[in-house]
Image (cartoon, rainbow, N blue to C red; front, side, top):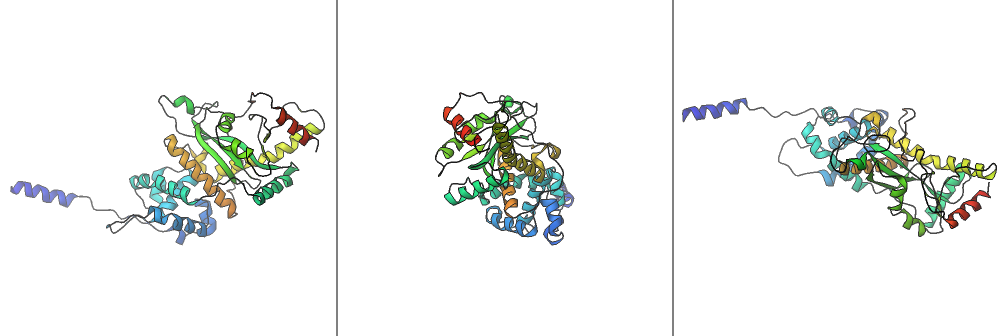
Length: 344
C-alpha cells in the first residue's frame, strides 16, 4: 500500500505543469499598415470581425485562461492571408496546434455566417448602377457581370472520387465559378465542384440561368469561349471578321478582364488559395468553406477600400484554356450578339 501511495505521489510531482503562452495582442502592437501586411485588414475592420463572431465563438469555461476570440480571429486571418502551416500561426498567437486545429473551421464558419455580402444585383437601381460601371470600362452595354472559373489547388487525395478533383493541368483542385462587378466584387460564387469539372457544366447546374431569365430589365453576363453563347451570356467571336466584330471582341475582352483581375487580387490577398502559399490541406468539404470565406473577406476589403498586397502578377489557373464549348447554335443568342456588334 505504501508503495502504491509513493508511486501516485511521484507521478503527481512529475506531472507536466500547464503552460500559459504569451498572447500579446497584435492589435495593440502593430500599426494599420503592418496589420494589413500580416492580416490583410486594418485594426477597425479586424475589431469589427471580432465583435461579429464573438457570440458564435465564445464558450463558457471555468479555466483561468480561455482562448480569446481576438486570438482565434487573428490566427485564422494569418493562415488565410499567408498560407502558413497551422503550427506556425498557432505559435505566433500563443495557441497550441491542437487548439488551433479545433477552432479554425469554427472561425471560418462564423465569418461566413457574419459576412452576408455575396449578393447578385436584383434591384432595378443596383442593376442600372452595375451596367453603368461596366459601360465605362470599354463601352460594352447592358452588362451585369463577368463570369469565369478558377482552379484552387488542394492537397492530393485518394479514393474513388479522386479523378473528380484532378484538373487538366494535372493537379488536385476545386474549380470555383465566380461572377464579379466592374469593381472586382463577387456577386455569385459556386465552389462545390472538383477541378475536372468544366466551367460550362458548373454554369448549367447553378442558379444563374434561372436568375438571368428573371432579371428585371434584362442584362448580359460576359464569358470566354469556354461558355456557350446564350441570350443572357455573350461570348467572343472565335474567328472575328475585320471591323465591327474585332472591335466587339476587343471591348468584350477588356470588359470581361475584371473577373481575371478579381481572381488575381483574391489569390494575392489570400495566399492559401494559390500555389505559392502551398495548397489547401483539408478535405474538399472544408476547402469549399474556406474558399467561400476568402471571397466574403475579399468583398469586405473592396467595400473598405483596403489596398491589395503589392506582390506582382499572380498566375491564374483556369480550366477554359484552349477549350471551346460545343453547343447547339442558339438563334436568339446569335441575333442578340449581332445587334450588339452593330454598336461598334
